[in-house]
Length: 174
Image 1 (tube, rainbow, N blue to C red):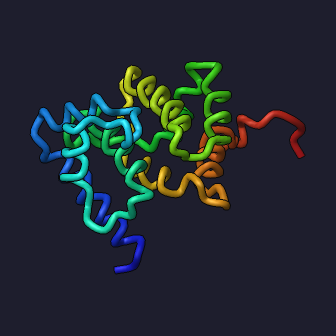
Image 2: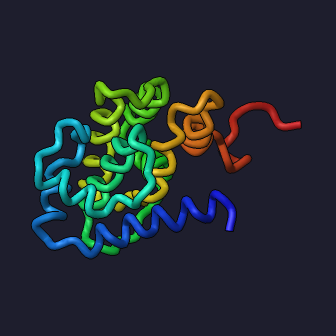
């Protein structure tokens, strides 16, 4: 099994453990959604570290915490849609969504929590509209968010802004 396979197994293990938490622990993580790990209360922190797989690099714990807390916004075992696809669907419902996502793509994951705050607002808007976020995909995106190649930002921009149906294109036909 390659590195990518091990990483996916580790992520599945994390979300499976979150599913098996008692209701009170899941509620503590749900209440912490949008907060940085450094701001978490003892109940949320203990629930999180109970589920966090061994060997996770300490500098990535914040991203794991964010994804775990977001996951607890939905019922255990819920299946979601990648966030960038949800935001793409929501751009047709809200004129400001394109601008919000463009501004989000300019941010880096930092200890100040600015990106997390913006992301939290979008996720809560999606939840209000009945969408369920694929938090495993979100975790993977957060772990790679600060990549010099901007792999995640390009993926999200491609999903949000690229015209996929040639019939939608405006202009001259050849």
